[in-house]
Amino acid sequence: MKRLLLALLSVSFAVPAFAQQAPLAPGLQNAPEIPFDSVPFLKLTPDRNLGEVLSVAVNSKGHVVVLNHPGSAGTGPVYGESTTQLFEFDEKGNFVREIGRGVYGLAYSHSVRFDRYDNLWVVDKASMSVMKFDPAGMVLMNLGRREEGPDEPRYRHANPPPTPVDAMFNGSTDVAWDTQDNIYVGDGYFNSRIAKFDKDGNWVKQWGEPGSGGVHANENPGHISNPHNIGIDRQQNVYVADRGNRRIQVFDTDGKFKKFIFLNVPYDKTRHPVLGNMPANRPDETQPWTICITNTPTQYLYTSDSEPGRIYKLSLPDGKILGVLGKSGHVLGQFNWIHGLACPEKILFSSQT
Image (cartoon, rainbow, N blue to C red; front, side):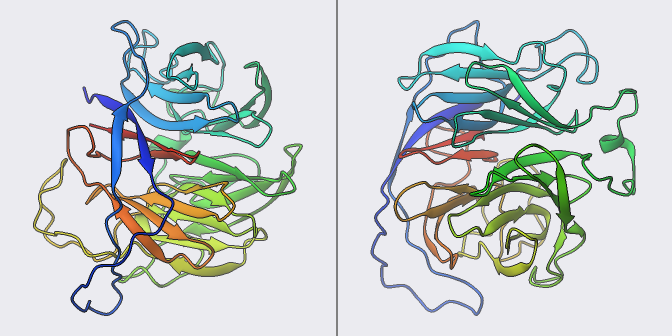
């Protein structure tokens, strides 16, 4: 079983100076390395191990919620028993409580986020639902609907997937909010669209559809191959990590396409990936898995890829890559499929290692 690590990164918000570098091929960007420290933060015990950590979130008090898949939360498979745990730790890394035990909508959750009111939102890929918990840990809202017949769940067995249904999800991935508290859901592994609800959970609209980004990932705007993470900046730009198409798509809050952003900083294509065989061909653009937008006076976007396993710092709203940090690997300070980012003053990530 894969072991996972949650670590605290101290990252400077200053932009490092660019070193003298050789000219790049068209379409590539130079970006400096950002120095960072990685230190164990959570105080774990032998009876409270982490398994597969898919996401982390930080509230206004500095408390950290960890979305953990231990593989042993219940006695049955994912569709019979929950295999999701929501652990809360205080600002010093001390365990506080488990949230959501026994909640029907928790099955194989994919993402956790805090809104500006410190409500915790949990997006569940398997139960195809989005749950809102108040700061006390009580469920306030549920979007979507879990399948009643879990033996053949829609998100896993349908190929091609069924036609999307308003207000229902199919492999939901992430959630974000605009300044009016409208709700945006990345939906998801199969529908590959963005679903928009108002603040009360009423269906508003959708945009996007499954599709390819083309050979160079710069074609077919609005075609999405898994909107794996989403985020919204203060200018109300919606950033979608279009993971399968190796690009970030930027829309307005009505779904109008604005531009692409690519992770196209050169990397060592001869280096063996941490998991999997050596690829025959590696594209210049790598896959964005995460979206994390800071709440600092000047906002930045952080994202990450699976290989070469780097975190990227981007300016907003232009999407210029200001720096990169880290690489894939198995030891402290290296990453293995960064799946979730949180952006308080110090950056938190969830990573397999």
